[in-house]
Image (cartoon, rainbow, N blue to C red; front, side, top):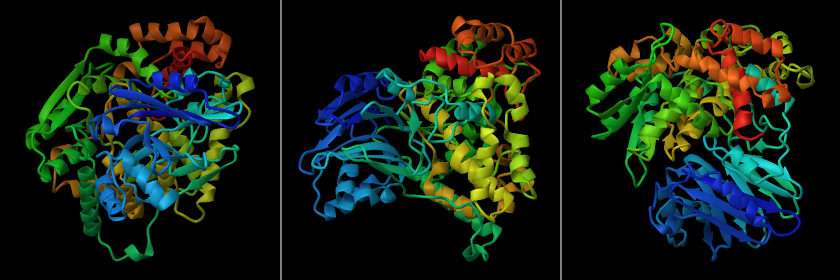
Length: 589
């Protein structure tokens, strides 16, 4: 996993200094090596985290002069060895042993359709020397990010939004629709938008082909359809359970591909525990696992060690507990926000940041359990959608952080031009036709909310410490399988029923039947003491008052009652407001 960047110019040579600035902003994503390639209208930059082919042969930008191709790549193609053998059979010769060169050869052999053969997480920029064409691509589930900015007569791109800013000349005005989404959808800003008007992001499962004259076309190469299939009607619940375990087993095995050890982030919940169990079933011994905990606040426990310990003992893992005192959490906030490509309000961002800091001292690669709640219906709002006759209203009631009426009290009137978030959800749901309400919401959460909340958060926080996180639940074959499972088998008994029942043959029941947990950081839910002083300081700075995003009366009401102003999902509205302003301040906007 790495950081890529570059630009294509439509009127003269590329700006190498701009690419150098972008590359320099992503050293944390790739601390092991870096490089820049420039020729004619293109310049490519790269920072490397060495996971496969640890030699200099695997460094990027990677150039193949015989094929006339250059590539920068972030991620991992898990089936690269199989593809390599297939390409050797077609007559291709390789000078490295990693997956980056496979992308070059695969593109030459199969063209744009090569991405359909890739199993993995990836973002890449590939340049054709002879045509001077640039191809940008992103994986099916959007696990790896790719940001874009039009700057005069050139297009810039990078793995992080702050890297785009580092090159300068970006329109940093706030996008009102994106702001509305941030304040409604738990900080989710759907692609192609970002909070800034001048920066966009390539949607998941999309290729962008850019010609040297500036013309371009987008190609969506994969789509997901959530809902039952006629051909599956004969399958029993037991059949689905077996299929789930088989698919997840393959997914965790794929994500062991590395020339360095692979660990697991073990929260103590069902999802990460099942990953450990499946790896153990496949012969993994001495597996390194890691858990994090915080002090309790307001009666809310800050750790789940009792459950992660059960799994660690049961499977004999090399387990590390990381206990974080309140002072360290507060001290880590500047670094966590600095690592955010976009503002993320979830309390657990700082938890992942601190966890990644410690884990990166032991391993370079970890598997993580993100995605299971979305694809197997683990959240509390899914049962309410089973019989919904108005999924848009019902979803808004349980998911939206605030309704449009409260938004009027929250935002400066100049930034409030419409009920963008409700309209977005309504348009999405309507586009799915006669699908059931529950499957429409599962589709929405998988296509939109998953990509720009937990997936983005894990990528940003782990890469803040040069740690590669792999997410087996988002293996695209596993996602496709989960999409076909009848909703009632997923939603039953509080959610994730089919996954829980399948897991009983692998992990202890005490972990499966426990109350649903989360990654707790209580001090950012119930803000008091030094944390309250911290957010007050952010909101009282001159730049916050000059920016004027929020009505001051609304800010004062949150500061007066920080414990009593939680979103329907149980997160602090004060932290949401403070985090956005702090993100702007941190990134010099």
